[in-house]
Image (cartoon, rainbow, N blue to C red):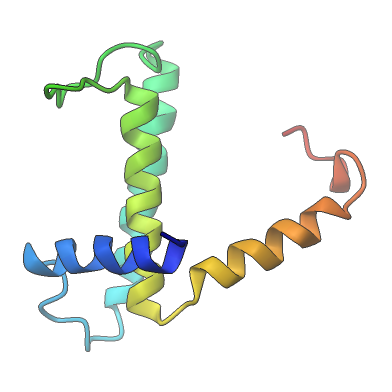
Length: 112
């Protein structure tokens, strides 16, 4: 399964749960971006509280750590948004990854 297929599966699930009932509104993309930001913030808060490697609050038969849960949520939101915006996410990730391979060490002076 490539990223586009996974993205479509994620989108279909979100749509089945009512998250795409009004996708024609222009501001919907802003909502998707805000929700993605929210998931990143939840990962940050788990780190701040020292909970990254602790069991998350949505325990199932296969419990996840907070890091696993929040990273999964970030990917799910990203893939769903890609389908909503008509982005070929598989292609984009491949091209961007290839570009990053040619960048210098710690490019731009970034710490991580």
